[in-house]
Length: 89
Image 1 (spheres, rainbow, N blue to C red):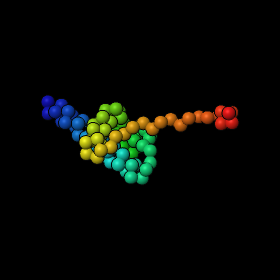
Image 2: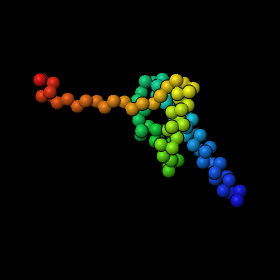
Image 3: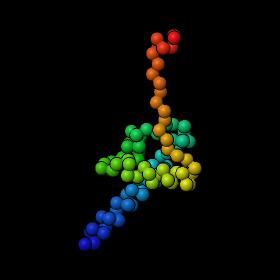
């Protein structure tokens, strides 16, 4: 049964690493004034560790950003698509 304990310990460690990577990525994007995109998170945070869902560790990363850095990840508002006819009127 030691293998079962090792697997149980490995999952939170991996999740903690992903939380740290997401926080680091969010801070880097804020410093560069770049929007954080889901594709960027998948590429730079999750990487080759497929099978990890963003929802699993997003909340923990959000809590760390709030408590330690006073930041919060928010969805950017969608750009309005205005037609030429509406611009003239």
